[in-house]
Length: 383
Ligand SMILES: Cc1cc2nc3c(=O)[nH]c(=O)nc-3n(C[C@H](O)[C@H](O)[C@H](O)COP(=O)(O)OP(=O)(O)OC[C@H]3O[C@@H](n4cnc5c(N)ncnc54)[C@H](O)[C@@H]3O)c2cc1C
Image 1: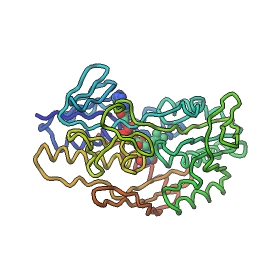
Image 2: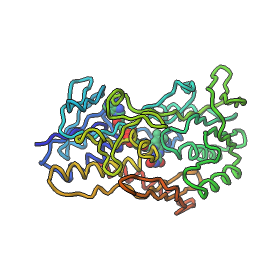
Image 3: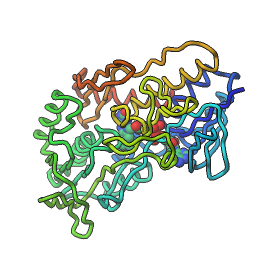
């Protein structure tokens, strides 16, 4: 029986586990390896930071996959070794016939000295941010995004709007100013002019200050300022959005390639298959920059389904249409309002193209609940 190893128990790994077990029950030996015994759903970390969800609500135990016949191994992966068809972990080696890896990204808190701020890019970080916010009653809150490569492009624009609503509910909005520092001159630019216009108008209405396109230097935690070239922005409460890089198990392997946006894993756009190794599929966030797609869960989900279909098709000897993504829906929670923006993605000559044709499907207070329902049901039906 073929051995399939799924590396990473996050969005891409869990989507693959469900699909592969449905297609290949008793026809393949499926193992998942991850360093966390829970599937944690990162979009909910913001809800934890804002006090809307408890830490227990944002994840599910990966041991549940055992009922689908999938073996779960908790271990930290140190290296992927595609030449020898194995993954090296802190508790030994795991061999495979097929590897499907979706290991997310790693955060860089050092380059701009971001460690002194709060963030909700991990569950621990979200809990600390929740506690920090609960004792913050007045002053200047700054959200600092120094670099365009970060996890989830819509996040900085969502969090400032969500904080505006949270401070209004607490009756302290007039005592708190909110500033967003971001590399884009125009807010949320890649989602098109409609989303940008709505966002700019909301910032104006809500009194959210936006500094776009300045060159970042670093956080000066002694002086409590964000230093930009030619400008210093003081803060009382700092939230940071860290730059990202490829996960270390891929570094030094021939699975990555250098791109203008850094080193990332290299895959076939329609199937998620490694360009170098036929038995390796890498649908995780670490491959999205080479595809020119956003570093977000939606394209990871589709790529993981495409990879799983190809693997099961090959094992069963059935031809498959991998069904890769052709449109991306971004559901955004702007506090008192939700936006659902659709962006078309074309497939031409075996490549994916972000064609920038984005338009609002829904801009309404209801949009917020659409996002909430979509994400809750995504998690609850994931296994
Ligand atoms: C605050 C926030 C809001 C977000 N909002 C949205 C949104 O609205 N829409 C959207 O599309 N996306 C959103 N995202 C992004 C989305 O969560 C990610 O793009 C998605 O989770 C990536 O999937 P992945 O499988 O590649 O990585 P992950 O889901 O991060 O999973 C990686 C898994 O691999 C494991 N792992 C990592 N390294 C190792 C190792 N060395 N050894 C063993 N295991 C390891 C991890 O523990 C984890 O289980 C958001 C993210 C955050 C943080």
